[in-house]
Image (cartoon, rainbow, N blue to C red; front, side, top):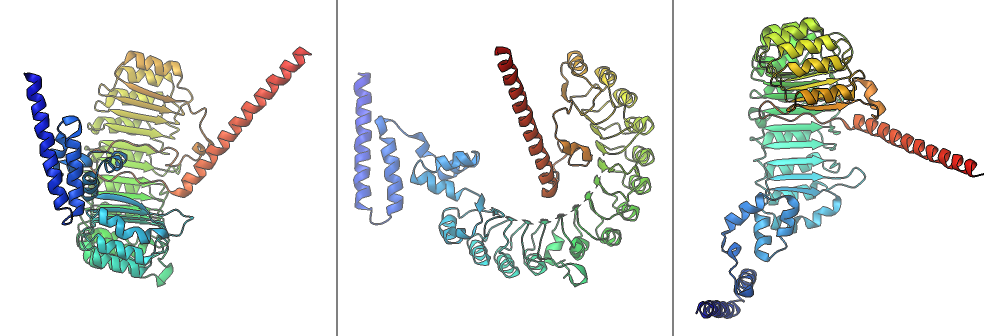
Amino acid sequence: MGQSASTAKLTSRRDCNHSQRSKLKSTSLICPMQIAEEAEEIDRRSLDGLSDFISDLPDECLACIFQSLSPGDRKRCSLVCRRWLRIEGQSRHRLSLNAQSDLQPLVPSIFSRFDAVTKLALKCDRRSVSIGDEALVLISERCRNLTRLKLRTCRNLTDAGMAAFAKNCRGLKKLSCGSCNFGAKGMNAVLDHCPALEELSVKRLRGITEGAAAEPIGPGVAAASLKTICLKELYNGQCFGPLIIGAKNLKSLKLFRCSGDWDKLFPLIVDRVTGMVEIHMERIQVSDVGLMAISNCLNLEILHLVKTPECTNVGLGAIAEKCKLLRKLHIDGWKANRIGDEGLISVARYCPNLQELVLIGVNPTKLSLEMLATNCQNLERLALCGSDTVGDAEISCIAVKCIALKKLCIKSCPVSDQGMEALASGCPNLVKVKVKKCRNVTTEGADWLRANRGSLAVNLDTGENLDASASDGGVQDNGVEFPPVAPQMGAPSIASSSTGRSTSFKLLGLLSGRSFVACTLRRLASSNGSSRS
């Protein structure tokens, strides 16, 4: 009885599907694409007489499923059927394209399928010819809802193309451009036509002229909404001065290797922009004069001073005394010895909310470290790199005093196994310890620490097989990364020039290792031959 009943149900489904197919054939001239999709669904439903429950899902639910998949899985799903191809394209909001010149004729078909893109990346190889103004304008006409745009090495884009793009995409919120050839006019066009712009990142913008003839950039209508400005490797980064000064709601300012005297500009910036929370400065011309101006940013929480040798204890003390909300401090002293105990004691005295401290090329002693550990009760992450004064006594002090410490990084410091033993009984909340290039810390000492604190992750790197780039002692070599205390901008990317140098050293190390192995094999072969003779 049960079998006959189920057979009857399957037969009725097949009959129903057959009648639906006949209806589709009669109306195929009306909407062929839609009819083809429905025919595919019916074929799947009738497969082996079983129901295809996925076909019953609404398009919105299927789109949500696609959005949780990786890009590769989404591509594979789009090949299943016409319906999935359509839904996958309509639900894709992020797209990255190879922006070579042959992209232009494909733009209409690409954005006919992906008609809901809001985040677009256009990247071109340095050796290839990039897209030009016509392709960018065509994209902007089909993506008027674009909110984020990333341009990399699009050297054929001009001021005119950027101006036309800005007029079509007025809802743009984030713009990132690197190694492009347009200049101040193109950037001003974006600032004049994109009132919702919140984040601006500019790296190696080659169209900006040097010297007094440089056209000022900003402020434009976008200045009122800008919250983050990041400038990298600009010959005349100070031409962005009007934009920075006019961005009254600016929260984060990052300056990397931008030439010019920033001491003159910071007093003007701080006078107008009072709500900055985060400031990064790397290899720029700034001294205590600029730091004293920055000290008027009373809401400052994050400060990075990387390779700014003209900054001393005086400037750091001024910031610590006024910026009492400081919770994240990174200092790369570049072995200049101009920031030390005096500045760090001021931080310990006035900044009780400090949660993360990174010291590279700075020589603190037990005096300042003890004050930091005692007064900064919320200190959770500490990194000490390239310091000649941090030894076992300093580590023992940290172990006893830093109760809240969770992560500790020690690199290129005169620490031994005795310091590791001190960590075994101190820092009750410690989760991870990373020790690198500390010659007096042995594998046995690290193993002993692991054995005595089973829950503690101990990462030991003796540095014996590392490349020669570590000798510079810079931020790239002693770089330390901690997870953010709160949602915020990520760490800045390393400049390509430094990366290239490090890579070359690694390649030399690899080749030397191969030659060493080859030499050893030849010696073994010759010794075997002589013994046989």
